[in-house]
Image 1 (cartoon, helix red, strand yellow):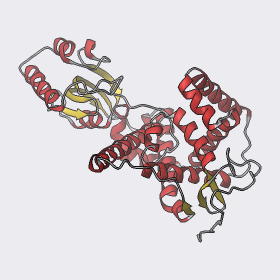
Image 2 (cartoon, one colour; image 1 turned 45 degrees about the vertical axis):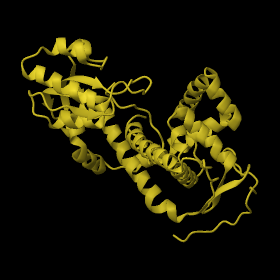
Image 3 (cartoon, helix red, strand yellow; image 1 turned 180 degrees about the horizontal axis):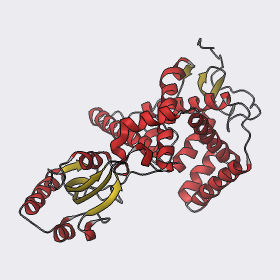
Image 4 (tube, one colour; image 1 turned 120 degrees about the vertical axis):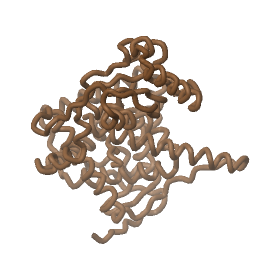
Length: 364
């Protein structure tokens, strides 16, 4: 329950003079050889140096991404995040074109085919997802194109990362690689499977403080974890996570595990799951030369993602000349509540997106 979700989401990765491309609204160009799926089909919704994006093209990409990363659908219901997502897609198109004619070796082709096979199983096995794919006209070639685009860009970014940059990244995140044994009892505020409210925040905090008081008075961790904890992954083991790498835990839990005094029950720690009553039993740093090959690969990917985000932030905006997404309709009644709801949804989506970007950049 406490561990972050891992999948490499390309935004992944939120994630010169400008040549103005003049196009008539609603008109597209004839699709070029090797162009992105949907190019030239439908209404033009964005123009940038050397290219355009149409609504049908963006729908294909958004649907692809929504199947791979379901929370994308929530992002795209928020207008400002939909525009951000479109801008990032333009960034990928620009970078993919810069790579030129990407030749795939046998290993890469197998990787792409395996990805498609898994995604097709997901589509065919879920009627709702299949309908979305069919409505967008998402084909086998489309899926393989988008996956190849994203993976090729990331591999190119990773090749440019130096050993010194990897070491510097480790120096700034070395606490992530601490090996920690920690006991905890979770007083949950949400149902982890549905997201529905389990108990009020105040109630959870009150119970967490009661549990801490019992532990401070010499209470038994095994008995109290079994009685109170909502973490199914540890409640039957006295709340113990033993010799685990800190970076796999959600941010608040990780931070407490890295900073809390060893051997002492700390004050309740709030996370997205509820309140944690924690006791760190052991914390051992991991030197750079003791990192696994996988750890060093993830550090390299973190640097590559940061460089990609820098391009998206610094260079890409100068290349985009027009964004023309359809305006979302807002209900006339209860405007204040609608605005509050929209703000809350945007904040939640932004927070979730930041968490996903961090997590998914660690995976592939």
